Length: 252
Length: 252
Image 1 (cartoon, chains in turn orange, cyan):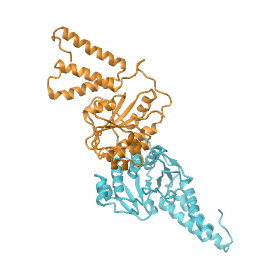
Image 2 (cartoon, one colour):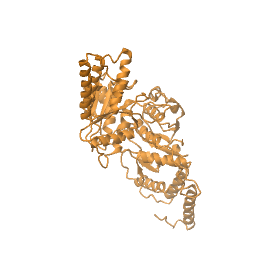
Image 3 (spheres, helix red, strand yellow):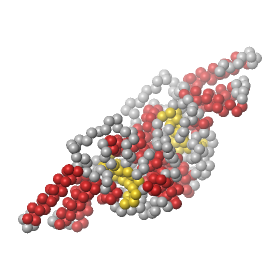
């Protein structure tokens, strides 16, 4: 069976919900649990009781300070959202995501599904780090799934999907897809240079502009080679401007 | 949209689980909740809190003394089981059941899905009253869904299935399928006569034999007309036997 996707809980509030998530994961043969800045101890008595036999998933869970750290070694990340975020990003159902994840793993691509805090869901900055958004198509007039139920539906579809009959071949030539670490490294490089040259003139607009730029590159499905190319482009543009004594403005 | 299936909780133990079931149902636009001999009050404070906005489903829930009463007005009943009951009965996945239920409703057939008590699941006598068994295909090495999660997966598949493009036509000629009340009425008639003639010679074997006979007729997908015919057959056989002064044994 192909490697299951990692389950990433971003800033979960209650340790009990981490426990019920582990229980839901175990039903679906998911094992890789990652926690971004959890508020409570995920090995608390309440968490272990709620895990109901799945405590080995809790014990193996990894803690990260930021979402960026949690996804660094992965190549495709899905964000679950309950409402439309109006980002230009593919939106799929759990079933479609499950098929994609199976295909990714069959070609060696590591994936994860992210879930936000219990009441508020993922922040837009977290969603901007994902390749694809998952929304669960249920009763639009009363949508009220808890964290573990949401994980269960994703895991259930992943379990049902089974391995693809034949690995879907890569369509991107020889170089493998960029890891999130590569991509975030490029974001940092680009944003630092954009800060340096005064691209973000209005401070309040910076977060939204950064998200839009990140989303644009997330969508491009970049390879490792392409990331190197983009670093080179930014570097060359900056060097050229500096040679000209700062007269050259960056094109928008 | 076609009528959703009824959700029948047989002897649920904790009112909180009835509440979380109502919440799961509301997500899937399911509304008809039926309770067979619940141990606790399903309008308790804990139940309403757990329903988390779905209390109108709790308020509209119907209570029944027996499973037979709860299914009397229905025509197709599915039983969820976590383990194999070794009954000769079709076993389907939630996805397959969802498609069947959509098809049934499009031809006016009323359905339900039954769930057993939290720890023990449905008793064999309840399963014997169902047409079809549903098992959820998840990790066989660690299967541990709670009641509301199990209801959620069934409801989720029902919601996803959508209405069939074209109603599947009845294949049974003109008369509609028998209701469970009709069928149970025939079971009672037959079993009374079998008791009267001494068919059940060994008392301990009676329950298993009754279940086997019920399963056999459940599988036959009987119409109302066929139920009348079967009543007639039993009546005639008994009358003939009595005329003969008890010498005629019923054929097995």
